[in-house]
Amino acid sequence: MPTGMNEPRPFRYKLLGRTGLRVSEACLGTMTFGEDWGFGSAKEECQRMFDAFVARGGNFLDTANLYTKGSSERILGELVAHDRDRFVVATKYTLSQRAGDPNAAGNHRKSMVAALEASLKRLGTHYVDLYWVHAADLLTPVDETMRALDDLVRAGKVLHVGISDAPAWQVAQMNTMAEFRGWTPFAALQIE
Image (cartoon, rainbow, N blue to C red):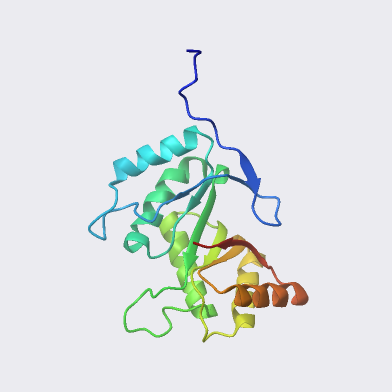
């Protein structure tokens, strides 16, 4: 058998939506980086998964502010710290950050900014490449969400925005509004 026949093929790269950002065709989801939920992976196992992913050319990494009570972001931040600009780091917000606080969840500006600042601190970085709206919020006006996301992009704290777990009609409404008003539209959609 020729040498290299059993070695995994390296990842190819795709453009993220209508941007020029190149992401590996596979994204490493880090929802279970950390053991704070009573299951998941210890830091050493996370390092092995990360190293295997990077060895194949992977550069796209996904987490969220609440995954394993924040440990996912902390571990991921440590893993990419040696060469942060090489990686495309995505994180999410929307879900409740504090029980009993009505403004600690949702897609409104206060929740968004507080969640991003906490995520940046845990990740140990000054920006994220992709900031996901984690879920639909039918209480917050969509123009508030899109304008606040655009402000974060203009401030350089977020490079691209995306949305997950939202109905198609709402995504279309939000992107149409953003494009009409000259705000940053969603570059990515995360679905089942």
